[in-house]
Length: 309
Image 1 (cartoon, helix red, strand yellow):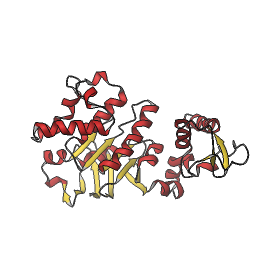
Image 2: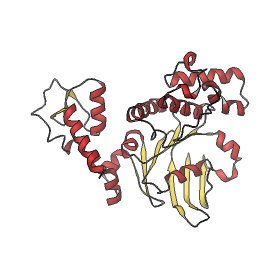
Image 3: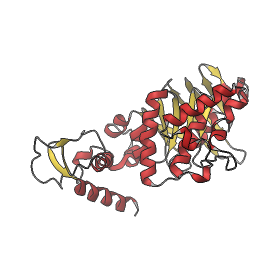
Image 4: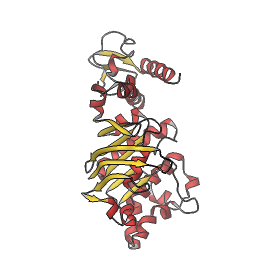
């Protein structure tokens, strides 16, 4: 679907942001680009819709060199969701969503139907939200509209540049769950940039870890957890590997009862904690051990304390 062939980007000041990168994103795949600030992940993503042009190599979509495509046509076929929500404040929600369909010359009835369809898809009632302005929505609701607007023209590809990083933790978690559910319905090819490994492991079909303009490892979340390529990847993945061998096991209070809710041992502690909290489960079985909401919370607090040092 999307293929990078020895792609590089060097800026006029001599900075080489991307260095001879090659990878392929399959159709319908949720593909994550992750790495520390300045590693080239956002530059790589922006080269897909030519917000930034490569200075070396070739990028193809469906086997066609994007440099040979009409740039406006290329961007109409690619939805783009920014960290800065960037809705037009003077336009209603319906007007914001309608921008690309109108540029494409859709019939008004088709545009109106598409607006309603997408609002329903992200859990916002059209009757309530169509005529509202962005300032009347919460940050999480505005970002949902940002996703909907990117999908309005029915693009094959959706680019998402750290779209949830400016939101509070609860809104961010909810939107992560929403985009997972939405992807099952729409089956778009998604390229998602983040610096948050928990987010990458939760959302991605595959994750590409970048360092200093190069890709260090591309793997499934399970592959990154179980087989980090080198010390950089290992440290970036951090303590999320083998979650039930972490201190949560030390907090176990005896053998687990057969009547307890059983947690998936492949889950991270953070996801397991959120699942228990959401479903009002105070105790559960994890890898044959009894764990509690509080024991998990203690572990997560210790991890955050270490990471903040």
